[in-house]
Length: 423
Ligand code: EPZ
Image 1 (tube, protein in one colour):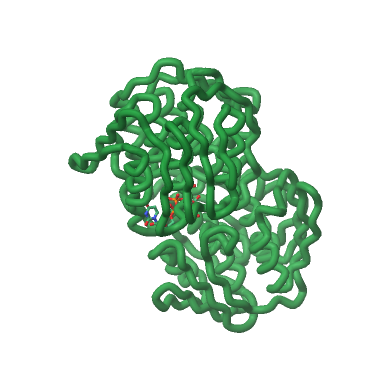
Image 2: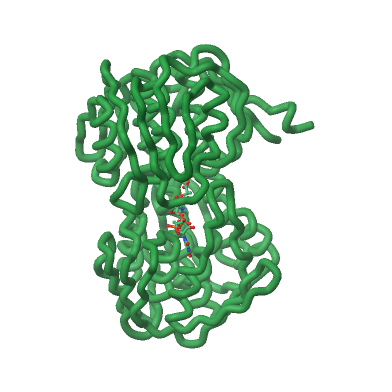
């Protein structure tokens, strides 16, 4: 059953919200649990569609998975490739994170080549280049990739782009390879550091995570471990931007301010007041807001996953702002929905030019992907009157209890069956 959101906009957000565990840390962590036949215990894994798909793939491989009482226990004693794995792997690009661990455990696996999506073609050449340097061999078969490897042997791998997923896949394979691997020009995202922390708890020796050079000393036997997932910095940033865009004041709990440096700096530059605590942030919308220029980039630059949301804020800030997207080649699809809502936003190659208007106009719009959907929700919260957003399943992929959390902050939002979509 497809649902849609109904939002009565024009209210400000006030109150306190708890940030969930990170989707983009949890997905590689769950994949890494396949590197051992022992039990792995995770705390803080969010209840999201992408996580449920990953769990279905793990159990499709024969792993035991129990997600209850706020913790997830995984034990991958016996693994084998099944049709169920392929069925779910086609649904989610992050299934490709199983490649490294399954090369270690099974020595061979056939996975669907992740297709492109609404934000770009999303190739996996860097994953394959890195894993083949460690000894893996690949064959393409009608949308699938058959991977095989004997003994994986460590070596230097230089990434032409600091790809998050490629860094994660190579790190997981290298953790169990013979000898040392250096990943040069590695991604530095907090999710990479969280994965390295977990691999070290499993007995691997990973150093340099969070810098551009990661060193991995392979260990033949990795054991089980317990780990608490870092907070979701993109969920947190989404609420920070929503608080600023609706002129409200919101207290975020269980957040890691150090993971949001670029976002905090840009919000402050725009005129938002932000007070920092150890694991909390207080966001107060500014009375006088300023237009600005944003360029996205690999961490620690401004995150591409908050680019659509920030564009909504800038669409109601006086003056001309620009957002330049350097990570994905097609991450401005959401601007069509914003233009329907009165945003003066024009896309010119990889730059969006935004002229702030007084407010936005409610409309019936459709989410095209996860973060575009989040942007439309923020636009609906701003626009006085009723906005309808279809394609809510995109949001279920990455936001835990979104409508519940927003309603607790005073938003007038409800989730109803989308009759039109279910015809
Ligand atoms: C991760 O995707 C995140 N997903 C994305 O979040 C995020 O936008 C992205 O990193 C960038 O920060 C997860 O962690 C599950 P990349 P990933 O490999 O690993 C190109 C969300 O909304 N590239 O760093 O796929 C690629 O085309 C999602 O939560 C290659 O050319 O990102 C893109 O232009 C969206 N070859 C750029 O690198 C490759 O082999 C960044 O991709 C791999 C990537």
